[in-house]
Length: 142
Image (cartoon, rainbow, N blue to C red; front, side, top):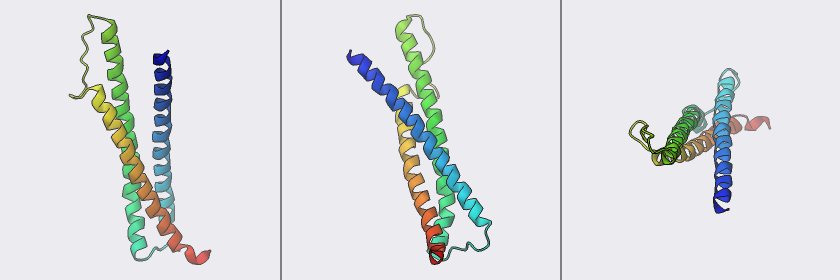
């Protein structure tokens, strides 16, 4: 009974992590698209610190998208190694290694969560920079 509840909650965590990573990745790319579309508008000219913030938003949003992609890859490697471990527990003659690129499933799990949180933080800073610079530039039009 306790294993069923644990497995159900683990399934929910896996599903929610998938949605969150996809959301961060999609919103990061969308933020980049907004920034690139604003560059093409001649009237959009941020000044001073807002120009620097606008410029920094691009690499930050790109990093957030890259961290999200890396989190997906590390998560897939974690799933693959976990499946191998389960097969090894079921079959005594199973000979596949429980490491990929010298790391085990526990390490890939930690890497996944680290990349997820890093992507969230970088995304948040990038979005704040982007929308602060947009808001300051267009504040006189409100």
